[in-house]
Image (cartoon, rainbow, N blue to C red; front, side, top):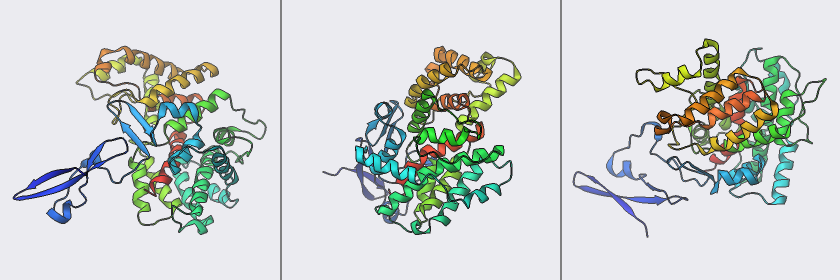
Length: 399
């Protein structure tokens, strides 16, 4: 039986239906509010507003819970790779063996990009940021896939368009990196899996093929899974807004990429590395800045601690920390920034001030450290964020 809440306005009562979500959370359906009262709601930042009904992701920030399609993130990272999670997010179920094989084959088939696109790359300025190149090239894919510009989400052609974007974004991202360094482009290797292929296209040289260490490949796969979706944030909402005009898949996602570029969204882990660089350059030691962050008269903030959504420990941070420690041990890197990060982490996790305020290290803190450790430059951090968010952006277009 439906339940309602009653809004009292002057001498009139308006009954608004309660909607129950997939995780038993409840919301108030206000779709009749303006038509029947002339009123609208004001919700700055949309922190209390659901713009649609979706079964893709559930977050409980108070309890530190993250689920994709009902599966706890802690379970998914032990049973699935990134392409399986991509399939789960888009189609609603984890793929069976034959479904995964077909999906993976589509990804491999479409990883190459049209030769003409190389000339577009060459026309960007030498210092063009990879995050400026990426959305431009994704939008340009529409020119080479005109048969896919007016397709319905439920059509077979939509599956092909989805596979093309998921596959080609890796090639475009790697080429954007190579362009920024003036290096020749590496073509995809169909014998490598998704994460290893991306690293190959990033780092292989004509005189030396990049050998992907198992621990790095596993950690990158994990990194992609942990960021696969996080409800309707700035970028995914942008994709939905653009797509609501029936704009094509390529252009809609290109717009979402531009939204992700902002430092308050996809650039958060870049801010962590910038903070570590500043601490190192000034030479005052991590404790000086930890004390500054605790000083109520100071506006200084430790980047990578606390989270707008999670009021408990970020579940993604717990998982990533374990794998980052493994990578650092395997690589045996001597990096003063990583030493500073370790000292800050160890101090904060034992400090009553941060514990009481629940300012734990978040996923951006560990992801920034991880990406730096495996050789990803800071200007590519947000590009990797794009790669992992492509599948959810595709699905949000059909919600």
